[in-house]
Length: 315
Image (tube, rainbow, N blue to C red; front, top):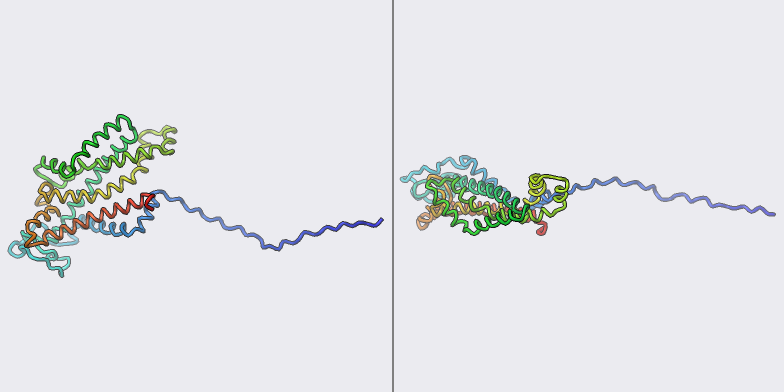
């Protein structure tokens, strides 16, 4: 019987090149809302321009003597009565001309920055803290607490802002910067309260708030650790834009003779004095008005840039 030999084919040699494992890529760290906002802000020209202007205004208000050597309150009637500006002498006391008392308009514009910045920043800080606390309490607890605080807010909100500030300031005979700050803050907290209340009502429904409550976290910890950081975005936007409005309100009150008064150096005071002499010396009115407009515009631009960065719908 013939032998039957079974042949088995040898396995084919591997012709493909060995596979080299790819190096693991480092996972990109997830950014928070504030991180994304900062990235957007750095690319926003409005934020850059407004930040430079605000930094310059803060520098002028803190160190006015760096920008002029002239006194804003001393003048020479004989030599400088209503002298016209000398635009070629940049940075000198003659640059913006002189007013009816022989005082340098340029020096008064520089030193008037301090009063406006102090009023705007101080009022914004007070109304933000007060409004945020009241809005948090009303939005988080709800019920009768929300009803009472909301009705109190509505009462103050119904008072016209400038008219109410004028009535409050009438009670003071000596009106200083801090008197104006109190009058504006007394009526200016209502908008922040409404914005914070709405933000808290939305945030308190989030899962991380319910988880903190289930774990037994206290009310104060939940409010300031979990709710406040996530509800502050719209408040910051409103406060930044309102800061320019408070500076404008101070100038308006000073213009009407109900805000700051001499010897305090203020743009509103100079605008009021310049309005009476606009036909013969328009520079007294012009330069404080330009500085006031630039300052208000800078803070409004900053607020708009922050709003665009913090609102996901606008990205």
